[in-house]
Amino acid sequence: MFMMGFGQYGGMMGGAGVFGSLFGIVVLIDLILLGIWLWKQIQKK
Image 1 (cartoon, rainbow, N blue to C red):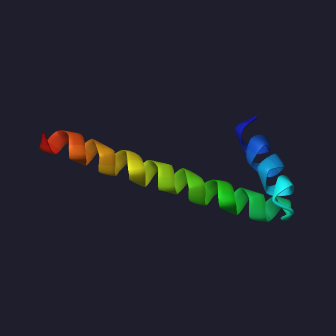
Image 2 (cartoon, rainbow, N blue to C red):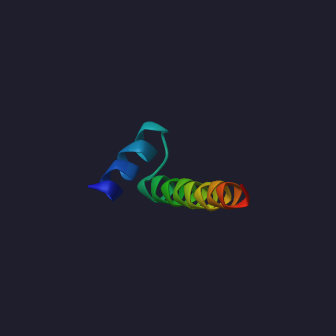
Image 3 (cartoon, rainbow, N blue to C red):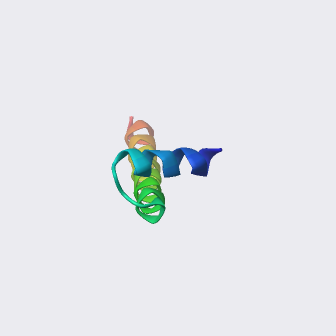
């Protein structure tokens, strides 16, 4: 279901399914990095 959502999102952007998957992976990595950064900020306080 999760990967299907990424495929549909890529389709809406006018890209191919592969582009949608790559975009989804990039977004996922960004969210993970943001989560790590926020966690470090909280740990400092």
